[in-house]
Length: 511
View (cartoon, one colour):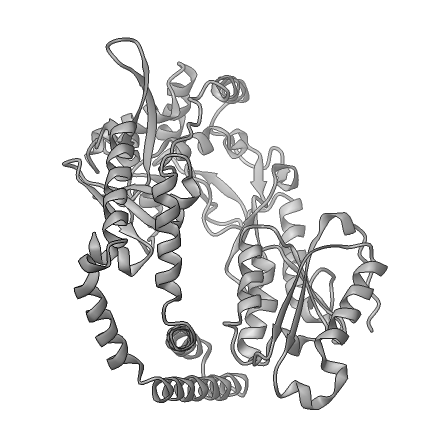
């Protein structure tokens, strides 16, 4: 076993992952679940590591990653319960080396998860020959940043690249007056939100629009100044002549994803270029921003929190506190897009009492749940479902056909990967074809999973939904957990119509 040094064991919450396929059983006891567990437990004890959970997929092939325990582990990584994964060897993680490489070199680093494969000598938490290239690239960039040289793509709004000197920035006189005006408005006590509204009302292009940045997906805020954008500018020391870099770092030269750094890790070099704003103004503005930091409205808890969205723009609804004519405090829903960009006309108010919507949702869900528990009202739906199942399943034939398609796609992906390594396939063509085939394979794997589930327990969804419905009718107002279990999303339209989207097809059919 490789020797590893873990200097900060208390920082880790460990997932021990164990996999054994039917083919592995023929290789003898060395691959058994018991053997793997013993090896992993010995390692964590030696290094005083804390195990969050042990995840075991017994009888599952390594060519697919839709294994129940593996997916449960991924869920715990997503919710930040796990930040270290340990396996006996790399093949326990998976035998599809394209997807195994994806998890080891991209997914785990992006989620800040340290991965250790004991027998292969793999540890993503230490420098090794596997990441020498990334290390060299980071070292060169870090050296330039420490010298105060600009190495970013485009300078901060208000500056541009020096016409002759490399890695140096100069004031962009075309938009410098706008930057100075933003600081001047802030100095009068104007809020960031109010400054953004003024800039939007006057039709001043945002930094992104001015620089020509194109977003892949345009949302309702695209092309508009926001309070966050203004606040970031007012806090940026670049405007007083300091070079500020290292706010985010790429996790690897193989990944495009950047991770935001704590402010203590930023690289700030003073007096590297001409300031746009004097230091006295800058520090006064910062004091004004800090003074308002703790006076913002409280966060409110309400039953539909995280479930309710604007039907028109798709963004979550905000909740605000307002006094009624009798002086009582009441919560109101309002469209967050409208709230932030009122004068821009991006969306409409949607203002309505939170209690009115909550009562209406509870009543509607109660009505649907009660109908669901009366079989005679669902006879037509049940018959249609049975007929659909008979047509679509064909049980063994359908499962066999999907498995063959998945196997063929996996073989094609393997061949394509070798073609890329040998130079027969360009990087661009590989990425395009790989993404398309991966999506197709994932879709097929989900279909296979559903077919196998229906084959083994065709009434599991019905049983679960009935159990949740019964519990909901008993404690509708007290259990937010039940609402989240039943409802996927609630939308409020401009005309105050409430649209409820359920997680179960049985309930969705009735609604």
